[in-house]
Length: 178
Image (cartoon, rainbow, N blue to C red; front, side, top):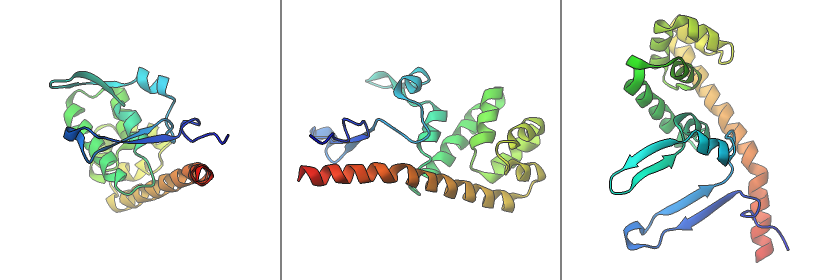
């Protein structure tokens, strides 16, 4: 018997059949590049209240950002917007943890330069790991934007390399099933 990708816990696609959800599909990924295992993600989950449903668990913002760093072009604007909204929502009462997260993950040159101007010491500290922040400190938006594009390209390539053997395995499984 050839083990299925489901057995190896890759991903599952489920088409919705209820009339209210017709045309929708649920993608359940049980492994994501760069993300911790389910137990750790669940421990850090965000709790969201949905009208007529109640409280549901969702990936925390930092975990969602990690999960969205894929080879798909359409995921990167979402990463950018998620962080921009978080900055807008919490900037007046930001914690050190949030500020560090913004410096580590923000994709918007103007926001990074604004944050660097407001918190230069923290920016310098985080720049040891994310070198392009030195351009945020100097106010060089063009070079900063190029650095952000290079970061994205690097992450996209890492995602391609991560999924390539898993895709090959999935194809072998499909062909063996006939």
